[in-house]
Length: 285
Length: 266
Image (cartoon, rainbow over all chains, first blue to last red; front, side):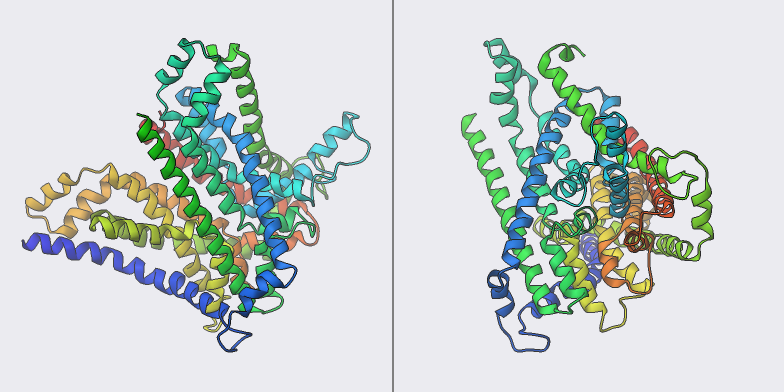
């Protein structure tokens, strides 16, 4: 009994330092932000004016919707590039798998600033792509690869691809190959097997991956600043500008809370979709 | 691979190789360009040398920024390990309900947009005059790094056989001794992985530090502010150096992962 009591005390004891630290540097700041968002101007009375500004100031809602569109484009790019890679990794041997895995996570382990510098060197006017294309005689003037939506989608897809490939890969690994063999032996072509068996069975990973990529893309700041020039504006850029240049804390805080609420909503819908698929599968068996 | 003889398999392989090139090429181009000996960045460089690496080690601004980054990451990593490992062990032992809720709360800094976190921390540190200080950077980075330690150590703990620790306790070892002598050595892979992630996260961190920094800078902040003038070879050299440091550390991780994580991958 004494041993047991000691144990119970100890798991609390082990958690307490981290919980206190989080309270000071994570939960309290987020709470302060919520409080700030409910004030009309600094030190003003309680009010929802900053939240209504989000929808009615004529600019913010448009930027929010453009951020959603940008995130959808990034998610689409990740699916188109990432799904084939995950299929390839499923078939590859252990050594090749390890190499592919290292390649996929390498952008994640590289600083966001360094990655953007690298892309400037690749896509810039005098960058690698334009230089090679010009030397090959394929173009006369440099292509506009930077300072537009294309550049931002490329830069963000480069790093978030890992978040799509990993869950899809693990979903594909859990598929029993005998299901595909059965479909093939019943006369389905390889294409049919893919569309009717492999793809549907990988939906849980695909949903998890696309959700993660979409949600993370909603918070992107630096890549649009560097690779979008002043031509791509995201909600996080607006929030940062409000804080750093206009010192309009209440508005920036309200926009941050709206962003958090939207992300929570997307995560909630996604986990519901995943549960529904599991249930369907349960009934099918 | 027999699959490659079929058209669909071939297409998948070709796309996969192109995607892998897309993922790794920019970092390689950056490394090549950082060794330019010219005054300006051009592709491909006409002459190679260590000229700009020598420059960043002599230039006081770059030296200070790199030094700050190393110092902050060097202090944050062991602290994150202590907090994160203790928390992961605590989570592993708590009642199931508490465990799930607490874990979600403690790893949430990973998925929360860092812009929001940066704003929130800045808002609290600003009136305390803690924003533009190394201590402030360290405190903020700590919250970003601890989740990685909780995840990696947590994964190690799942594979850990608790009866070993109970055996030590039943032989008379106090719980602290059992933890220190039995549990910790057995979850070392998770701790090493957590250390690597924590160091890289702190060393590479941009947006939260960007909110806090005005006079103090770290390497990523300094690279960003220099970008507003021109893309100089010195920027490529600092970026190249940062890349080499993180790549070396992740190399350790991937090689170890290759030995211990094969079961998970295969």
